[in-house]
Image (cartoon, rainbow, N blue to C red; front, top):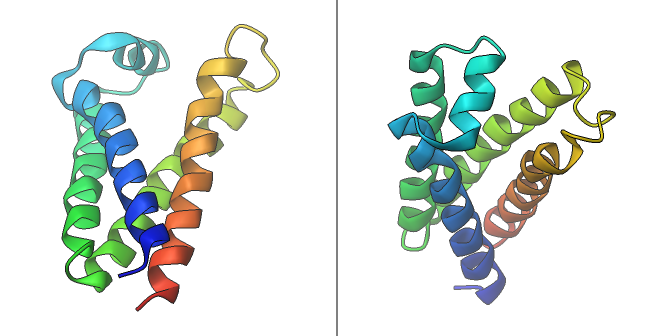
Length: 122
């Protein structure tokens, strides 16, 4: 097993868990922010659940690589969707929202990197 694939998978899994758990529990600043933007509780829980499914898939991918590829692709779509959401709301141009909006951008890059590394080590 490639060390880079393990490191990327574990790092992305930890980040997705930190991001997903508060969404499923409807707690924290992310939930308050998403609620203020008109996203329903069920939608927030669905996004958080998708992130947690990605965590499980990444961990399973350490033993069965195709699961890691699918999980990394799922997280790439979820975090990429968050970037699009922030772009549409002008958060990257707003000095007050720029830093919080950079987290999904960084996680999108990590998801892409993980997808590439995991899929090339099949």
